[in-house]
Image (cartoon, rainbow, N blue to C red):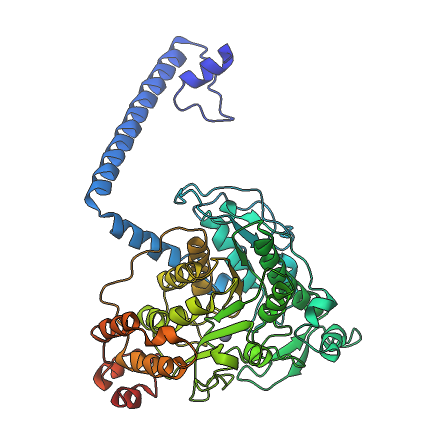
Length: 517
Ligand SMILES: [Zn+2]
């Protein structure tokens, strides 16, 4: 350090650009001395203040249970994404402020790894690949539910949570024609490519057959984005199967699970999960792929494409009945040799306990018997609490547990691919929670007061009974004992309590379902 620097640092209030004037007289010297004394006094007060703040902080840290801190962190995390600010890059206190325009930032590979200062420093036990690409944000119709911010908020959230830095970047790419043709007919692949009329409007609505009135729209970027979504999920699966990584997370849009062999629908153009599953099955070492779809809507496209294909097991948890979109997904549709499993919920407002009961009673016993070589999660987050379309109440913790459980099935090779999810805050927090579980972090505890509804357990045990002829695990004594234990801890949603639900969460079918137990 130079003497000049020494001199500067000796003055406690020596601010940049404000050098003290040299004293020119005794009076000036006295003034300077007074200023120095006052400066030292202020510095001393600041130091005392800092010391007191540190003491208070230490005392608080001892007084507050770790769980409470964790809950507080969770609450704060839930406040990070503001729907109204969706169009803006999201700034977080945990990360350095962005210095680049998010619209221009190259996102083909994750940004330089930068850990959040408050991120939980947990060494990743599992090598997880991550793929995203901001070019998928170009497909846009202003005001549409399926908006570019869905991709952006998830990418921002997993970076802010320090998770992106713990992943291995995977290359983004478009699906090839050959890959798309394993799920779609040639006319459809060509139609998506040519649907946009370059001489027409910038946004061209193709269908108007759902509640939004603009089910499918095309822009000049739609075909590329749809190919990227399918290609990125396929690449993520291939990275896992090659052994580059053990699991992977693909942030993609537009979604895919409604897309049929020859038709785009429900915001979907190509069936990302099925394109990826079929590519995986091209490998000699892959015999069976399971697609677990927890999007609140039934993946009619996935079911349609795989119903007669017993090398792909399709499991969907979705709302069914009361005209809920797309209207498919009945429990009786069991597919070839019981490889199509529809957990079609008849009620709104279900939460973590109901979904985990589905894992206990139906999904895990069957999936373990199926022993998939790869699991693709068609991960819509529109069953999350707060989604404007879903009406369900899953929490980020619920998604952590579901992810963890799927990682424990078969080979443990799991790929999460984004599907729906239209409330940006729940979408971001739940997607991040899922990636955290994928990385091997232990899921947070679910409240012991959280119990499945009796109606849910009845639906699940009925469903399990219909699959028992295909899957003997559903007839074992051990299984029966487990179900009996779950039945002892159910809850009944009485009509009085239903009335207490806030507007918008009340299910028209709750009362009738409750009496059907
Ligand atoms: Zn959905």
